[in-house]
Length: 284
Image 1: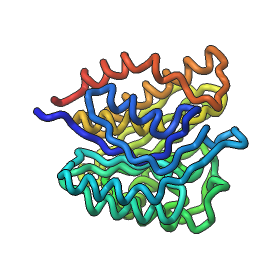
Image 2: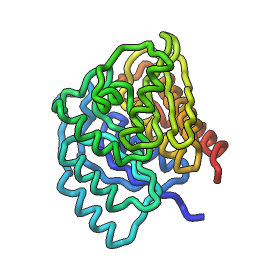
Image 3: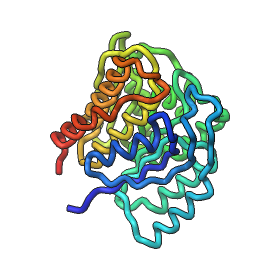
Image 4: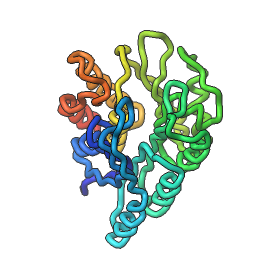
């Protein structure tokens, strides 16, 4: 059986574990080749740091893809995260059309959290992101991003089961058939994810204890783990469960040693257990 290959389209933050510096090791650790298209290079991510350097790589994306087309390269999955402009969204949407051939498209619509659109984005950004999400097979938003994609008002939790189920079903109307909704909580003690597969009507929920604080890069850790598990032919609910355990373990290690949360979470020490979990559930 040939090795699986994922294309990850993200920026590179040279310090502060997120985006490609998270996606590459997590996906590769499960035996999957992780090919990359960097959308920008930053000295650090933008969360909590100042005076960071930024180099836009938008002009390089299309030539990279055109070269690959001459080589006949194919991908089992394409996985997108932070995209910094309308132009990048349009280019990535075109990449889906050019490279998708028996390929699972996973979109993490990174643009908002805690009820607010990130300040670097104009108010029209969710409209363009919605167009990209319509081409996804699997969509991994948090609740803020889900409400922006649906043009609904954000509400604070705790949430009801009916509300979460309703959000996921409405998101599938946009195009993607599989939803992984993060930041779900029904009380103040547990937080986790909900999943919905519109083709099978299967829903699942998985929760873990809350850990105090806000930890940068955890969304990228989680989504990369989901992608790695899915490509290893693990179903949506089990992939999300494995990803939650991996992410929460990373947060706990970081919390226990009181590392500066801007630096990202210690996912590296959890890789061994993550691999065991993926191998245990893999259908290969």
